[in-house]
Image (cartoon, rainbow, N blue to C red; front, side, top):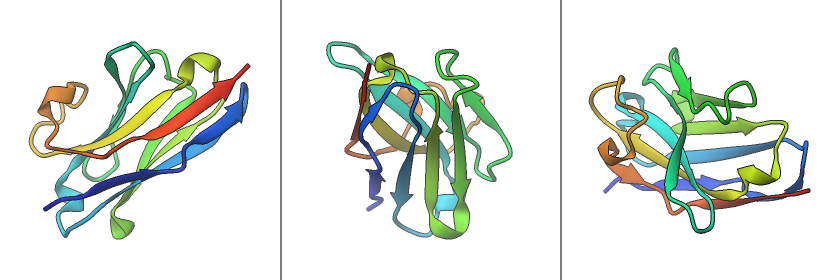
Length: 125
């Protein structure tokens, strides 16, 4: 069974930076497209960013473009979400997910096969 575990969340101030990590169990990590999603209180879960299997392609939601970076280390079975210039509206539960298959639909959360439990990020003003 594949396990996805996020870490690194916390309470920060506006303008700060924070890095989330996500580790995936098993030997197939390098075959997964990895995505980050977030859910703010009272809102639906939204796409944040994703990275291709080799880490050479990324896409981002407009709301985080230029501030967040998704990267991966296949040797460590880990994907990262580097967040800079954080804003109060970035406050949310952040989820990591893994999928097989096509890259061009990696922004669709319904296509992901494995999900973590989430890590909370709170940005104070």
